[in-house]
Length: 112
Length: 115
Image (cartoon, rainbow over all chains, first blue to last red):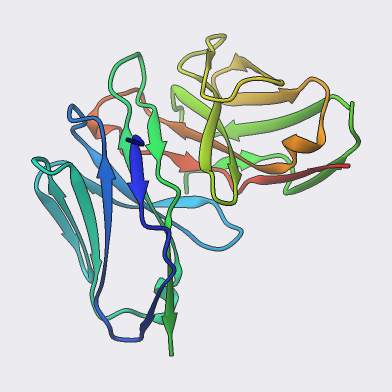
């Protein structure tokens, strides 16, 4: 099983739709998780952190299911500007520093 | 605004050349990282450093080396560039480990083409 797995998409949704991405991880010891957003030809940027069962920030909700080892990102009322690749990120446990393992990303295209 | 700055946005080099990619951060972060990103493969860790003069191999260190002489600067060196090193290179930095480290801050990337 890969350390982090995501559905690559693309997810094509109309404006105003609600869309959800899932991500599974293999290391059951992982405690904190991140969602990053990456626009085309740009660097990844931190979108949300998830340390417990979930986190909400405006239209974005991240949830964690430790028993099933997956995290999800829910986007409500999608905007054209939400079009991007969303990367699921899991820390690698152990060692002197917080190495992060990145998923390959899920592409979201919001259509007018 | 905190920043990670990569010296070049686009770079074209010839096969066999020695290539230096520079990265500077102004956040006093202990950790710095070099990734390459290729379509379908995502971000792959090349090298990282958790302190000055300290370095550790990532998942794909072959053909690369790094240097960290100062806390704010982390350099990636391609000893003899090859066409399979054509890629987007991303530098990142973060605070020392732990759940509250808040993830990474990335530079804007260097798109390297080796011809």
